[in-house]
Amino acid sequence: MSSYSITAPSSRQKWIAGTIVILYALVTITPLIWIIATGFKSGPDSISYPPKVLFQPTLEGYVNLFTTRTRGNAASRRLVLGDVAMGQLARLGHFSNRLVPTMAPWGRKGEPS
Image (cartoon, rainbow, N blue to C red):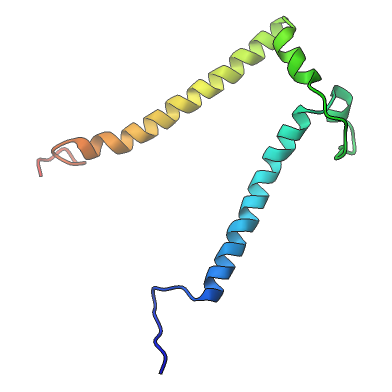
């Protein structure tokens, strides 16, 4: 008689779970890779239809972003920096919401424990 555990996953279950995790990682990372690759395309290549997968990489877009002083670029830089700052504040708020109640001597409900 072989022993069977309800809590320990079998090797087949581990293989299936690993495959699902790898597929999920590939699906979620693909748009990020596409965005980063588009950053290294020239202007016409980045808006071409059908999209170009093979292209000559260039830093033209990044050079223009940081050297050209136009009102639109300054506004877009402020927008990006504002988004980053808001993301950090939201993250800080999320962690402080979880951390502060656990540090209080009376627990989460405000009642002494």
